[in-house]
Length: 84
Image (cartoon, rainbow, N blue to C red; front, side):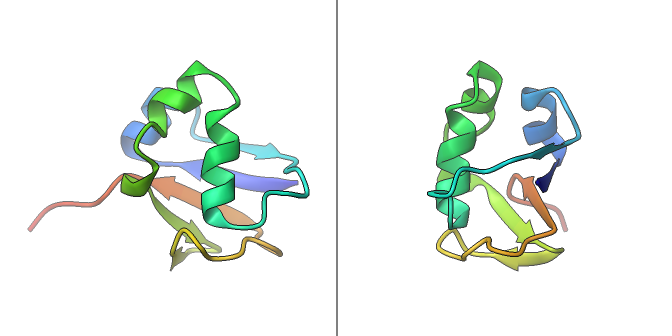
């Protein structure tokens, strides 16, 4: 099981703050994960319709979309941060 944590409008659109899911064997990178999540229902599709805008942290460390997720204890998904 992999723990997913959602932040800001990603959380609002999916409708939950976190969940634990079993990932299929073919989900090996962050990009694969985003594609898989989009297939889980309308709320995921709405939250991840622009996957290139989603930022990801694996075990609280920022990760690129081609980063492998093997061994991840927690994966956070959040929109781009702004502010000053």
